[in-house]
Length: 459
Ligand SMILES: C[S@@+](CC[C@H](N)C(=O)[O-])C[C@H]1O[C@@H](n2cnc3c(N)ncnc32)[C@H](O)[C@@H]1O
Image (cartoon, rainbow, N blue to C red; front, side, top):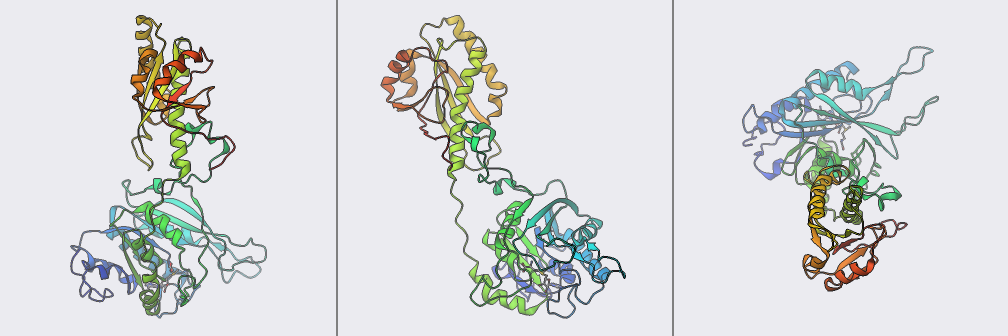
């Protein structure tokens, strides 16, 4: 992007300057003009995502002449929104998207003797957006603690707003892994770690986010009719853009989107008609919110689920080998070592492990060969193939176990409890322990990974 000088509303600031990425005063109906002034060339889209909430139909006066909504007919209001959606479509990258936050409303003047009709404004806006090419891809319910007080006889108190997500193509950016959460795991996570994604549950489409208390952003209260809470902006920004991308809001209001985007390392750009709002953004809000939050440390739950999954793999492996006809007299134990762990969501796997099936010194060479084939076979099939682990597995004789352990201490997991280590052994004692352990019903797991997780304790 180069010269935006001369573009109305951009105050003559060059788009290559950092001062350009802020809230500017201007009319969203001029957005085509404005964005072409900021583009590298007049035809190259550069918006990654737009996050916005248009004025609340014709109901709310945001205090400027010629505003969209208040003072217009409902039809003209929808037409204005449509032309803006069309311009945004043009300036959005193929991988891009548009979020529209909107609420339904009650018809003002019902027919005599009739109840006032609920106007599904979000879906009427969606129809406008779709008529110019956008594809409605998701609807999120934003559950709020407080809403504008529309309660009415014979109606329930309104407790949510709609968040509509539109895309241009199938290649749209959507990073749902960034919003995974381990907070809601069921109590049986300890015994069945393989049934839980260690990075947390995929985010759902009901977001419970309180709205900010007006004026709480700064001592000098900035009262705007409906500022987005920072958490709402954060979710939309993280889902639909990456660092360095342009995030736009043509109805910037308090500037919450520009702030939230900047905080996450995006280029936030906003337009707002009301000069007072723009001035307040520059005076108060922007500076306050520039501190980038620390990246979230790896949660204890994520860490523990990864460990438990890795420890359960060798137990399951032994179980499959016994099912294949071998006995716990032949398979003395399984040694598992961790090679790498993906604490952050990765497309490849949860991590890599190495398993050595410790076989009795008396196992014949023919049985050893047969066991090796069976081992390769069970690793490829469910349930082991579903563990999401890169596993390298082989066989080792009990007499060679000390060498295989390579001087490390190992924790011993018996009776199938791969979540609670019974004891820790130095490598030179492992062979002796195996011999005196006899023939247990469940093959023990040995590992340098030490976990003692009680079943009751929650993290
Ligand atoms: C629902 S509010 C947006 C609130 C915003 N999401 C926030 O977090 O503060 C709609 C905004 O659109 C602005 N507006 C109305 N007509 C406009 C126009 N023609 N161009 C740009 N902004 C306009 C209003 O002044 C108001 O601030």
